[in-house]
Image (cartoon, rainbow, N blue to C red; front, side, top):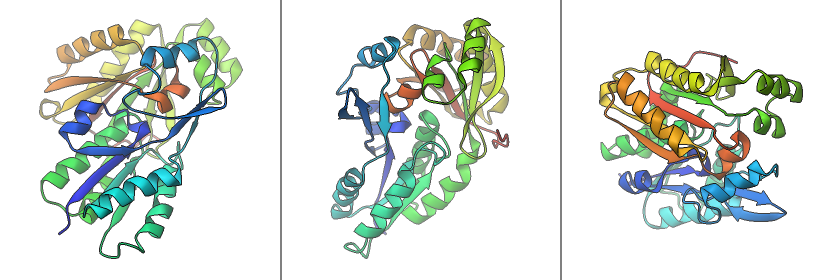
Length: 294
């Protein structure tokens, strides 16, 4: 059986330490600002987190692209040449075309590598929800499973990844067309913070409205605590859009309320951050099947 390489993409917000520890690589999307394209690096090689989010704070818009076909081809060929089969865990198809784009590139490339296999899996999530699915794939790889068996297993288990996210202001969701201008205006006026999940179809949908930032952060923890299965066996993941002090307070609250192994913090990267905006914050864990449909 050929060894397996697990890949994800720029939407996963998976920090470098996790990618190195679990031997996961990623394919890059792109950001576009002032008509200049840059690779959406999870290591912030083109923008520091503060510089990226300051662009948004000034009221400017950053646009994003899916993974370009040439990027898929470069990374897929690299690992096929090295003798690997590939499992690519991509951003939810409700938010990006990258999984289907990857399938088209894989079909073309595999004509040159008839002995190899590439599986492109819709994570039904984004940010570290997608990252959690990639970590599951790496776990099964290390247990000796084939690429095919890994793809089948994680395709079933994506429904057990639980995400709870909130934002400081609704303005950025309005700019990218996620909510109506009137809803953003009145929501901001009333200091309403949505609690956003990845639903059973992979859509990002609000499930609750909380008044005030502090209460919304507490609600994230409450919702996650209620959804987890065997929390003492797992890590909880926090991603944040340049609000590190709040993320640290949230981590302390999680450790107080949830008997988990530990809490891992990382930045929300350029792709998700461009839509969510500064001070967006999300927590992720593995638990009950997500059945809500927005």
